[in-house]
Length: 510
Image (cartoon, rainbow, N blue to C red; front, side, top):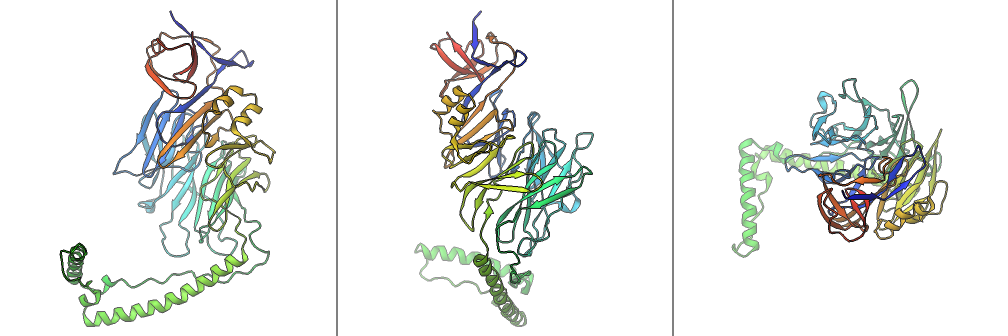
């Protein structure tokens, strides 16, 4: 019987043995999110979700041209395989193993409004997200913050609306309130308020013992205290629609002539028609009375719109002259599982960069790093993971001096993992709440490399592993290169002596 010696790091904790996993993920997708235990890694493109199981090497994807899938923006997947997002704009939860999507509870008038679930607690008791208001007018709230609570039968009832600020620092109604992440105990939510000018500000919810929610909006250092902003227009004029001035028959004729015009214009463009066609004037398809009414309404609209744009320009000019743009990137939010830290990145009027870490106590306390990097993740101890999108760095808890991710691991005594990462483009890295699972990705243009490290993979108490099983496993070298696959008991036959990753375990072939 051939034996495979499992290379393990033995931790003296009740005699348990922990194996370390270090592997590059097969394929060229950007796996930018994961479950706490690293079992599930997630990739997303518009309308598409991919899920890789690092324990079974199975890949599951949701890619249907008739269905739009969307992934939540926060802590969206649990260790036991439940994921939140939306399907065709309906907030939903996916049972990964059973491949079943279930819509979350919504109100009757929410149908057809694009909404999404963003975060879920490990117990699945709470899910947070946003629901569209359906109001598309100027200067209105487009998305409101909500929370779903799991019923005793495992289902989710209709959401509860969370409170939110009635106005921003200029006195204007917010455009979006976007909850991103929720703490593991369900008492802290990391969110953002998006202003009507599309600037983002941190918003933190805290749940009191009586079950009520309060919020704190961080809008410090934006303008001088007592600044009075000019009035911003609240109603945008609507241009008259020429179709409202035609009969059904007239519009059908206009529509047909428009199609013929496009065909003739193309023929003229390529030289098949000697005369340039004239665009069909909408007014010629109206009665004289309707055409006059349309002209009058259009003139009135132009007058109102000119006044509207002038007032809006005055407001924006004052804003840019009197506000220091201490804003933050939209959806670039991470909350530590214990609810103590909020990671983000700065953004001015247009340019993003500089990582930021908030400590959540009785009030929010901000630490700005002015490093030109992006803040991505923070663990329960306050170790802050940042990146320039090419190299992953860490600010150790309490420090304002960053180190590379491999050097951070060396400082924790994880030499083997650090040496493995020395041969990998670390790119952008994220971590579990205890920092014992770390994953990352690098690349661009649709071609990425992704990797994962599990410092404490499985506790078994066994170091000699019987390798006569018949399960199909894949083999990689220590650089993450694919070597082959086959039955577990046979796959290492013929391999040179050395260390390999076999079915996510490091093994020594002698």
